Length: 313
Image (cartoon, rainbow, N blue to C red; front, side, top):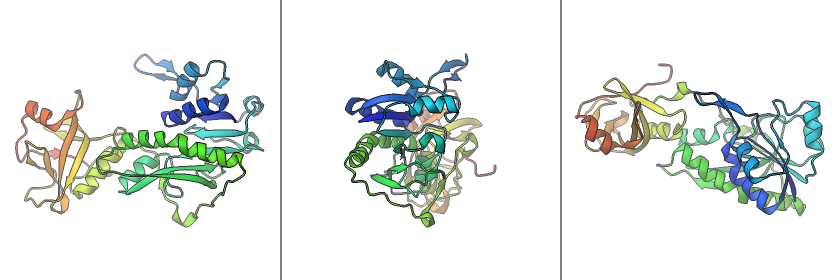
């Protein structure tokens, strides 16, 4: 099968690699190179970098605007029986898509969590299961017909970054299944139930807070749902302390929320009589480390405060 691939983020890399092995990729479309690092060096997207290295001779497009006529005509001229779109970053217009079989891999069980940050949203909300959906492209964001889905449980210690990689690795099998059904004329498109739609808005650095007055489970969901980005940063003795991995405990305590109840094991009091065990942290300007290593150097004591924050603070 001949495939044109549209993508920018690392989420699409496993699927692009699979397609390049099992099919013939006739073109790759990604976002333009952007300045990165202190020197502002122009850096390709993960998809652009991979395609340049592994797909020599395959046309690689990096348009500022994919829908302008000259770019549109070049892409439409590429031989293809399917267009695969994964984390591309630009909306494909009607004139570009006309007459093409185009599908999108989205990291949620649609119609739940349409939008920019579905993996984060699933963990933040405490979903017990999430997954991938392959859908047709529609004018409304993530509202296309569902052609296939795969599921994966959300384990309590899994961070958003880890779930991103797990779902990315699940993408190739699901996409291959949909492409084979398309080739066989056996697809069974399903309309999304609009009454079940939830939205996963774009995240920013301002979202990196945790409120220890909430339950330990809610705090855990917030830490893991925002790791690695934007990350949850608290303060210990006035310095930033990023919380990377935690464990929710159901145990009674008499400490104020945000107070260290056990310095050796990193237990912090939360609301509703629950507590949070800090497993991995990263002090400001330092490396990620186990709480035990942090405690050995900083020597926290029972009663010390881990100062979080809350929405709007």
